[in-house]
Image 1 (cartoon, rainbow, N blue to C red):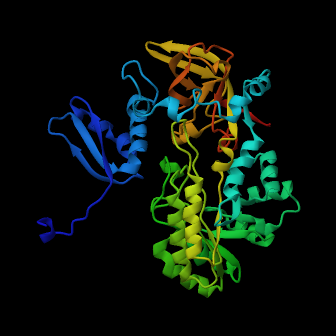
Image 2: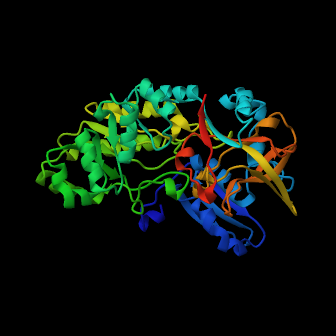
Image 3: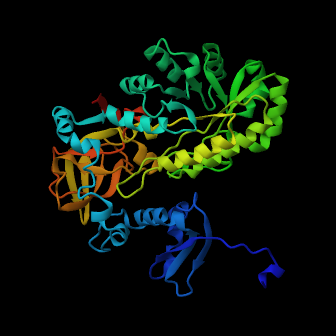
Length: 483
């Protein structure tokens, strides 16, 4: 009541308080940069420092609390596993494994069931990507059941293995391409493909690629006002999609966030007036709208918000029939994370489709369909101990899988030869590339029996793995094999 005299107070909640506790916490301020990045895509209402100089606290939404704690634990202590000094992890304290998880975390994974096959494939190899077709089918099937979604465009940049593409083509998927070479890849693999089955959504590509895509008959998406200002005549009289920036991005790392004023993707909503003028000037028919906020998102609300935003924006145009909600459907990074709730996603999008029945809703998943279907197998080459630090070296590193180095991405790593081990050693798993950043995993628990020649398995490696590989140091990256 008293505050109302001076302002308009508002109650927020439910909330949670997260605290960093330590002696002389002020001395930790210079290290807060990495800590504060954790809150970039989360709602943080208040930050406080105790006068006792013992803790630094953050007030956040209750739904974000668990994820933030996990990320902070990883930053501060190097992982979520049990530590001899720190004791049980927060998951161990707040969950009962016998109730929440199977006795062996990995027993339900496809690669656990096919571990003998994987070991056989590595007899004469040092490294290898292996993909499981059945897993791709299952993931695609789960998205086909979304009642509001009329079309799935697989983002082939995630994995363009011929057999994977053929499988998805046979399952009825359309495709999202970000370069003309990706379009040509599909044309070569599927000579009979109908051009509208390909959505061409490049970013800062040469003008000739847009011309070629239009000539071929692809659905072309523009994400830059410059194209309409400088080359509007190229698109005159054509049907196109426009990609708008919803204003804020999401994702586990700044490099996978594809919206917001610092992102190179999408047309700013503030430019809507200029878009209208240019579209009218060149008689361009805008038949679809598109937005993509980021990758690795596990909150179904993301796509509902995008759907509502684009549906409302569609009222500004006369011929909108299609709304492309983008991709970014996340997969769990580790056994403790909950997967994307597909049922909730279905319910949310279905409600939006009832509110806007005159639009067809599309999605463009990439990683969701193929990440869990792929593993990277690596032979152990050497072991090293420096004081209390242990290293396990493997035959290939960031030249085969750059995601950990580029994004700080987390991939679970297990010793395929010792899946039933009950004793573990804390190690950094490193590759042979002459770079300090060539680390596939920090502070991981690997079987204590790990030795030279063992096969390590890196999970969730079916997306943005081989497609981003390089020959750095003249080392050949892992080849591919499809089960």
